[in-house]
Amino acid sequence: MAVREVLKMGHPLLLRQAEPVTRFDTPELHALLADMRDTMAHLDGAGLAAPQIGVSLQVVIFGVRTNPRYPQAEEVPMTVLINPELTVLDDAQEEGWEGCLSVPGFRGVVSRYKRLGYRGFDETGKAIEREAEGFHARVVQHECDHLIGVLYPMRIRDFSRFGFTDVLFPELQGEGDD
Image (cartoon, rainbow, N blue to C red):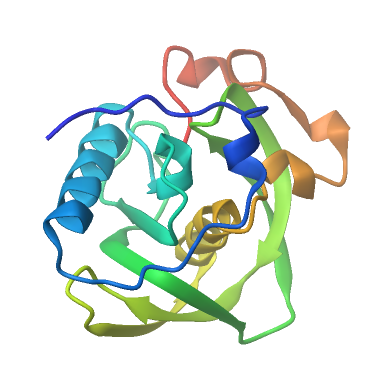
């Protein structure tokens, strides 16, 4: 449908709690998801949350097959997740580099849970329930953070591992962020 502008860190909408979706399988929801898919694909993102394109609804999409920005990442199934709920399955955490389309040009190390369960709904209202680990779990947590007004820099513990992508990873120069 359309590539939408991605709001950048500092925009007040990115700091708000998103509203739950109450109606599924509507033309408006399908149009929103089409715009989100187009925007994510255009920017080589691993995921996108509706608030990032100015829509304060609990809607995220994510998925990775092959992505030049994440050459080592394992595949993550293409998913629409609405009104998500996350459940930590193991207290173990791991650190990993993250970027964000709303924080362009930067990367930082963030600690995330290694294993979690997530559930919610697809665009038709069909229930989704999965377990995820590794990069898949990281992407889900990153995108769902957007729905509670949290951007990944807010989770960074050591700012010596936060900086410009082109300085930290010159081999990725010219690539976008999640």
